[in-house]
Image 1: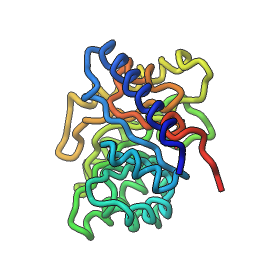
Image 2 (image 1 turned 180 degrees about the vertical axis):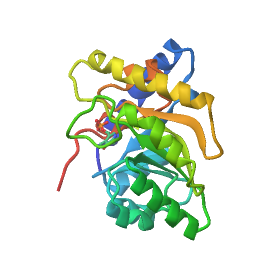
Image 3 (image 1 turned 60 degrees about the vertical axis):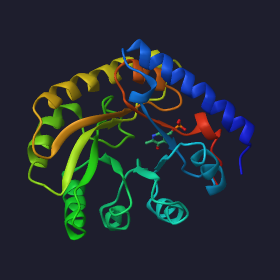
Image 4 (image 1 turned 120 degrees about the horizontal axis):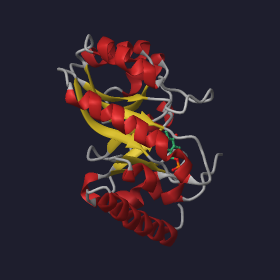
Length: 234
Ligand SMILES: *Cc1c(COP(=O)(O)O)cnc(C)c1O
């Protein structure tokens, strides 16, 4: 169990920062969904913030998510935020609120197939590698159009928006243009919605850069270390 006082302080700061950044962009705190990224974090610490009203958790490993899933009630929204292998889709498709990390048509196809089996339509985000980093997953911005055109064929998924991970920069101002770029594309796609493309979430911003991301239009931020402190990998 992590130190509760520290978590309390962290959360208080983050909420204040979200509020300020949201107002700067003409919105309010309630417009921003805060996902607590709980990878490597123990269940007790997660329960501590859950009882304070935070019920969105982000995990990047299938096994960790399915294990933790059994220890919470169904009011928790589980977000899958990591690279997803096709052979593991079946383990999480009935558990997740939103899959943030769809980075190929092949993966989309598999999610569609598994969703069909359980008679659901699964909400997903398309991960976009805006900065074209070799080390990161996600489709390139110039591939988005074709991706969306193909996606309309899979009616057991619904595309709800985009997710991006900005390059790490000590000064988050340096990544502002990437957030801006994705926001512009998001707005364009939003104008021509289809039966299974309903743009609603722009998942961008992590501990280091979430205020800038919100200022540029993000409405879903994924915070790990900012809430729980430095991750301990066992
Ligand atoms: C780990 C992770 C986060 C959270 O990162 P922090 O810097 O700890 O806030 C957000 N998004 C994704 C996709 C992650 O893997």
